[in-house]
Figure 1 (tube, rainbow, N blue to C red):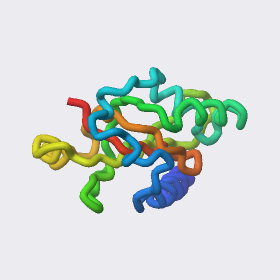
Figure 2 (cartoon, rainbow, N blue to C red):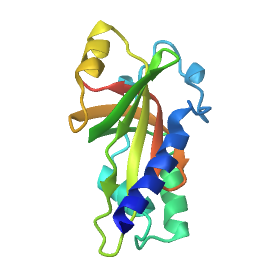
Figure 3 (cartoon, rainbow, N blue to C red):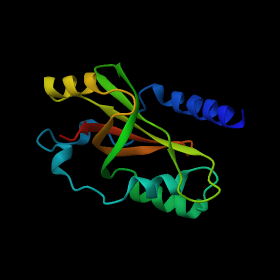
Amino acid sequence: MKHSFVWICLLLMLSACSDAPTPSVSTEQMPATQKLQDLPVLRVEIQEVVDTYVLGGNQTDLQRDAMSAKLVGSIVSWRFKVYDIAKEDGRYRVISELMDGSVSGAFGKFGVVAFITPTDEHDVEMLLKLQTGHAVEIRGRVDGVSARTALVLSPAELVR
């Protein structure tokens, strides 16, 4: 019962991400000739990010602030399992399955919400075929962290 309550709370928090966030780094600021795939990728493992933000972990506010400063505005490329995909305003919102921290005593979950604008029909086909539990690799600009439960990538793209 306790785990069900935690899941419900976390899903409610993630649903707060359902509206498209106002990007802190505008996609219009990226030159038309410069694509995400052409930008350098920050080398940080997704599990390190999860362990930094997950509730009940052993990281301090100072460490979370340092991680946020490193991530926000950077390009990352991660592979994760899909929980849900929705289409809104011509782009797709891909939500990862909730991930556990690796630290003993961590009880929270952490997810990724990526806003993808398809570049062609192949992207649309790939998004339509993805199901809950399927693994996908996504590259995107980190827009921010939502309530220590989700990292927002906007803009983002599928890695083929």
